[in-house]
Image 1 (tube, rainbow, N blue to C red):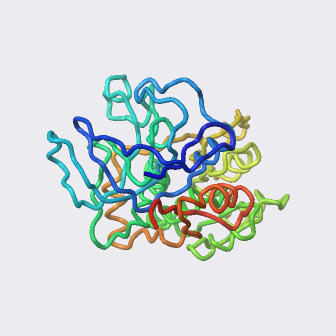
Image 2 (spheres, helix red, strand yellow; image 1 turned 90 degrees about the vertical axis):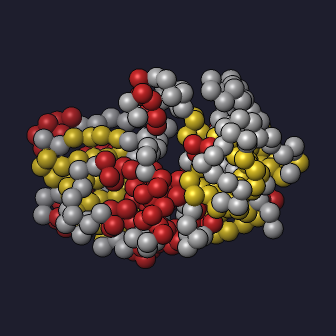
Length: 346
C-alpha cells in the first residue's frame, strides 16, 4: 500500500509498504480522508526524536497523519464493539492507562502521551491499524471529510468547554489557523455574542468573517489591545490563544477584563513570558488544555445535527501523491490555506 513516511526534517516520502496486520483488540481501517495538522508541519520541519515512543515502541520513519476517517475493513476476533463496514473517525491518543492522570480519566495528560500519526504509523496511508478504543462510529449524514475534522474540532471544542465562557460573553481569538477557526465555531455554538479574531493574514481573517466572527483585527496593528478594550467596554471574558507565540500571549493577557480568563490552546515552540502584574490587578487567570478527553461522541453529534458546521474550514483537497508540494509546502507558503485534506486512494 502507499504511505507518506517521514524520515527526517523535510524528508517525507511516498512509499509502498506492507499493509498493517491486525492484532488482539485492534481494527483495520481503510482511510478515506486525512487532514494535515500544525503538529504534522512541525514534525515535517524539524523531524522527530530517533528514540522509540515508550508505548508504541516505534521510531522514525513513521507514517504521518492523526486526523482521519475511514471504513473498518477488518476486526480482530476479540473485538465486539465494532464491525466491518462501519464508517469511523479515529481518536489518535496513545496513553498508558496506569499513571496518575490516566487513572483519573485525564488520559490526554498521560505521562507518556503520544499520537497515532506522530509516534505510531498513522492515516496518511491506504490502511491503518488502531486499537478499538480509538474508534468512533460516524452517522450516515456525517461525510468522511467532516469525519477527518472531528479530531481537530475536538481540540477546540474541549478547550472551549473547559473555559469559563458563558452564553452572551465576548471573546477574542488570537490566531485564525485551523484551530483558531474551529475555536470560533465552538464559541459561537456555546453562545458567545461578540467574537473578535486577530491574525496577521488577511485571507484567514476573511475566512473568520465567513465563519461568524463579529470583528476581525489585523495582527500587524499596534493598537490591537486598545481596539479590543474599546469594542468590549473593558475587555473580553475569555481570550483563546491559538497561535503559540509571545506577542499573541501578551495581547491575550492584556485583552481580558477584570476576572477574565486566557485559555491557551496552541502548542508553544518556545517559552513565553506572562505579565503577572496584569493578572494580579485584574484578578484574571491563565490556563491551558492539551488535546481532548471524552468529547469525540459529543463533537460527532454536534456535527451531525448541524450545530458545528466544520466544512467551511476545508480549503483544499489533494491526493496522497501530492502531499508534499500541494499539502505541506502549500501550508507553509500560502497563508490563505486552512485545512488541507488528503485522500490516500484516488
